[in-house]
Length: 197
Image: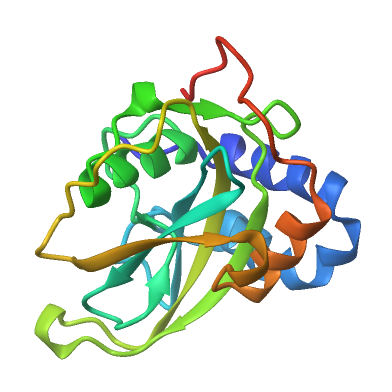
């Protein structure tokens, strides 16, 4: 069952209440939610659809990045929501587990943001003839999560991931995310009892 558009719209509005200067850049996402005939989180919805990512922060203010095989890029873990995901946050947590082996119970919501995205980014995606995908856009909704345990040994999904690294806030690969992290107070121990849902 597709995620409820009203829930996604409410999440985007919460994000915009924290980042009102981004109304113009986020407007295409709101238009997609209003006008798309198909499920806006489905990878078959073209020319754009919603993806989600997890910004996993360790106790030393470092962020987990993966080397993504298909794109060749260094990214935070994430991907496409699946029909069984109840929320975009749940999809992001699932993607972390699939790509890196970090289990949901090793992650905790950040006290300042809880389940509100830390960033919404827009990516142009090249055509993938092997998957019969034309060029399109991803509207990537990113959630900040604390690593609630000592940094575990990663178990990478070798079909999609060629490596991983932890980067300080100032070296985060995404410029928009880097700015938000550097301006944040996301450090110290995670909140107790606030595991992601």
